[in-house]
Amino acid sequence: MQKFRKVIAVILVFSTLISSVTLFASAKEDCDCSTAPLIVVSGFATVPLYLDEGTDAEEKVWAPQSKLIVNAVLKLIFPIVGLCLTGNWTKFTDTLCEQVMSVFKNSLCDVNGNSVHNVRVRKYPLSADNHSDFYLSDNKDEQAFVMTAVYTLPQGHTYFFSYDWRLDPMDNSKDLADFVEKVKSKTGHDKVVLAGCSMGGAITLSYLSQFGSDDVRSVILDNSAFQGTTLVGELLNLEFAFDKETIIDYILQFIGAGEGFEAFLKKLLTKTHIVDSLIRFAEKVIDNTEDGLSEKVLYPVFAYMPGMWTLVCDADYEKAKENSLDKEINKELIKKIDTYHYNVQQKAKEILSDAKENGCNIAVIASYDTLGVPITASYKANNDMLIDTTLASGGAVVADIGDTLPDDYTQATDCGHNHISADRVIDASTCMFPEYTWFVKDMLHLDFPYGSEAVQFLMWLVQADEQYTVRTNEKYPQFMYYTYADKTLNPLK
Ligand SMILES: [Zn+2]
Ligand SMILES: [Zn+2]
Image (cartoon, rainbow, N blue to C red; front, top):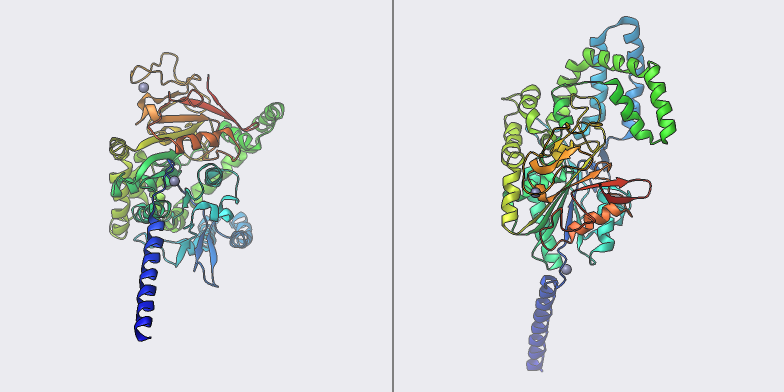
């Protein structure tokens, strides 16, 4: 009997061992499909930040809650009356700063660029089909990208990576490296596709700079901030500028009225002096409050977030750093942002070329023909709404909004192909990768709406098994235009 029990025990132990080995092996089993899993790397503030995430005390800190904003505005009513009566800007500015700070208090970073509070971003660790709460929350941007991929790629081959965008991109990309490892082992593929959306482009480049491209089949930079923007640097440099005509066009751009009504509105806004008065008012407020606001709010809130510095382009970087940070007090923070700026943003071409050399496919997508936020010096620059086309494309020569390249302009680099757009707005020959850079006219920043032909273009790039160029598919040449009304994407002719 004793012997029999022993035999049973031995058999049990063995069978448990064997079954666990098979279980282990099945998790690691290679997937024999040819579609590398996709990781969509989130842009700035797509996913909310929470204080004490996952506990009973959980509270949303970004985007700031509307009750905080309403509260702050209400608390400014008396001070505004006081300002009108006394003209005392100093007193008003102090209260204004206090109230603005009350809105951002939970999302602050310290002088070294670390979060002051216990703030976390919502994470999506499983394959995206398990996170419909995320992709059903919008029908454009990262959500549309992820949702389309969930329905297009094999089951369990789509992932979404979120991160605390305030923090050091070099640290965030270490988390991305862990995520890539997990996706590889869960899907049984040895390479992934990284699609860096907006700020996600900066995280993707940081990842490549630290971990190389051995695990990456393709890199897609989608309206990405891998070269920064002019908006953020110019704001930190307090380079405000207002132009009446541009502001009117900007307002009309968002009303989306029919052509006749738009012309009428434009005439009305131009003839009456509403916009002039608004500009004069804004200039007066800025003149009287910018010193206080920048020292007490703009710098300690935004310049202390290392992630914000990925959005500053090279041309503005040194001056913005000089203006908004202190060499001694912010020494650690400066070390972080310099590491990103000098080793990643400035070396982007090198990093991507190395990846290319290593067999990784590259695709850069930039949109144009939309005004950016028209409050800083670069208000005329061609933009996708937030990122300048010349920066998102990695160096195209781009005419200002509404303009074309001069009549006598000829392509800057002659590579044997035409790289000038048919509307003569863009010369792509100066891009880091002129053969792998696509432009979409009239597509707003990152939109690529769900159900549109444009998001199918993204899927085409995601599933590329070789380096596609602007000549691979006649449906997707270097220059295309998007029409919102019928969701079509067409070659620009
Ligand atoms: Zn597969
Ligand atoms: Zn060429």
